Length: 117
Image (cartoon, rainbow, N blue to C red):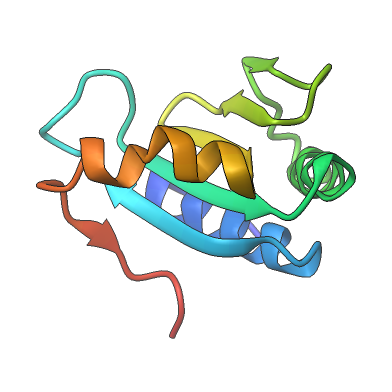
């Protein structure tokens, strides 16, 4: 598979997260709204071990396509891991951290990218 743009990358990240039982996967379309990225993708895990597995699954899956993050933050605690893929910023949260920070509410006016067909 060849990933051509941020939308395709976002969909592939969602697929890889689902393989590791990621939950409540939401993508926020920030094109024309933010200079930070074109898409945010938010993923929840039930515990630190699952957050770690989701992050590892995304890294390994995209690594096979020679797509590597510019940086990753939060892997030590696995409560909120941020993966920067340039056009796409991935937020993998422990369920409780996601409820606390509520990024969906911060970007409530932005459209969401439909991930499932």
